[in-house]
Image 1: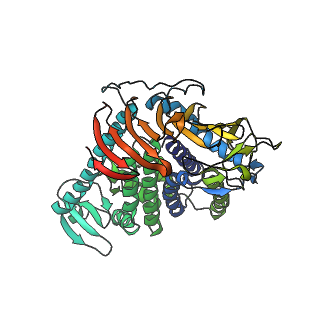
Image 2: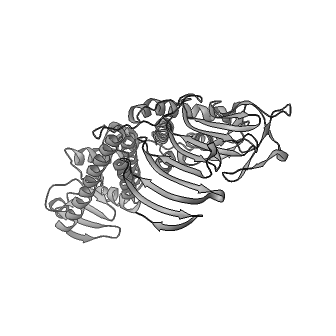
Image 3: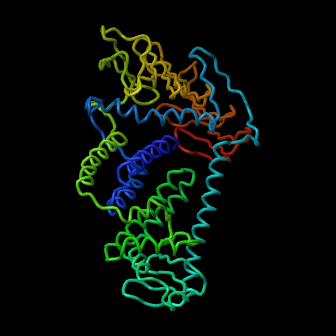
Length: 485
């Protein structure tokens, strides 16, 4: 989740920077509207999308594998810095020859879960903003009910008895009734608001407002919403001027109408962000050459961003890790495994049965991800590693000397405590095999005896963490004979 948030924020920031540098001051407002909406959708979804490319493929001399590392580096750095603050530190596993004794421990019930607190804060804040968002919509609905209505060709006029700045929401335009009936509302104002209605600007506002509710912690969402609404005003202003209104007269009218205005939330208001830049944009001329050149530059740039954030450098063989030693399986030496399946014997490059450790490394980061320990060609242990290089999981395997069949398998958790054990019939002179599992606190969770072909024999018992029997059954040759508890 942290990596996704960092990568999406990085991409949203890059796209917003492109908009501010190349597009915002150009009089191509329809394209800018599409770009802003595309930037939001692409910026939030691209980190969730991936497609495979060859790691050796290069763009401008940079290999895809290196490009992926450039993009992933900031996200992984932030993730490594933040995760230790919200995730309890894990103990490293003991060495393979360390004797492990289950120890009963108890976690304090009052221990603080930082991740839970953060999710709680996020949930409560999001709920509050969602309620406020719904309240804004209810306010608009109440205004519709409170005012008198007058139908026009393109919209429904809502005439209110209270002072209000001309503004619109979907098919409704809100006006002060006294001003409208006295003819004080200029035709240019209605043209401006009708443009918002006809071009469905309210959809963009609702979309950006909803994203603000979900991603309220991301300041870019507020910048995008402001840019989207300002672009709406550019579109409406441009339409009014193109219909024949004088630029200077329209600018003076905007200053007069917008003084001291207070628009409702989630509406498109003529008074939104009446700055010097907006007034200058009204009289700016469109340059087809400059706009065309920026389009030519923009599309390859977007393609490059898609490759950077979506492409995944895949190897042709499809594996994500590579071994430091190439071993081969000796098919003629495969033995029947008393624990089920088969036992494989591995040979070293010199064709001798391998004794030692085989390590696997991540092909992207060259970080060790797992190790396998062999003795005379048999795998005796496997170890997994997390991104910090710490041992996180270990399996150990034991074989019978004469049959070379696996007779014992044990699993250990991240703290090096044994959590599961499978012993085959005949182990340590016992005629029956056994299966045991342990709770995280070290107390026994489950135990049962078994015969060949994994047939339960005798009593099967399930315990809670306090050692109290929860369930107990009696088996004979794998069949349930009696349910004791």
